[in-house]
Picture (cartoon, rainbow, N blue to C red):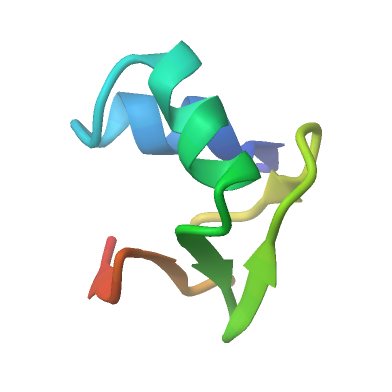
Length: 57
């Protein structure tokens, strides 16, 4: 099931949702090896590899 990237990060203990939004805008989050810099990006945790500051979640 897809969910917004910032919500996924917040639910997995990275930080608050608002701070996760800033991390995305700052280019600190990658999905399947691509840096995401826009809000509203959706991920499927079952299929996608989400990396925050080079740490896999």
